[in-house]
Amino acid sequence: MLGLNRCYLIGTLGADPSPGLSSAGLPAVVLDLVTPGGARVGSTWVDRPDHHRVTCIGSVLRLLADAHAGDVVGVEATLHCAAPGSPPELRAVALLFHRPLPRPGDPRG
Image 1 (cartoon, rainbow, N blue to C red):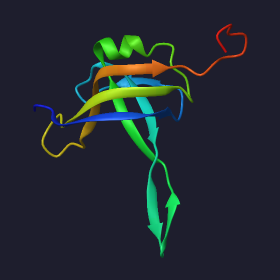
Image 2 (image 1 turned 90 degrees about the vertical axis):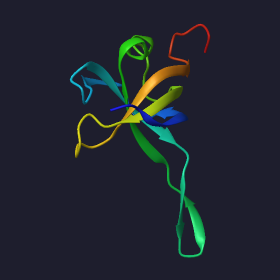
Image 3 (image 1 turned 60 degrees about the vertical axis):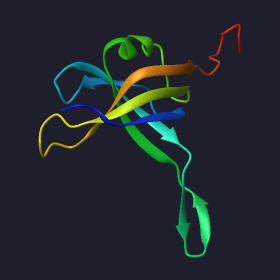
């Protein structure tokens, strides 16, 4: 099925990317992309980050080989359904940017 609902997500990685398979059975890396969010509790708003499970395949997969938890990432993604009745998959189609956090011993940080 064709991709629907193109979106742009910018956030931090909640965990190191994990290897896996896409819904189509292709080699993939799965990101836990955390974006700011909020929820109303009674009459007040509280911070409640949103976690997005994003599947990366192809060239995006190779570009995120050195990504780690805490890095800031921006992706362009589409919503895919592999088969009728299967859960939708948020699939990264392009990496907009990857800004790694400074690591110990890194001369840039």
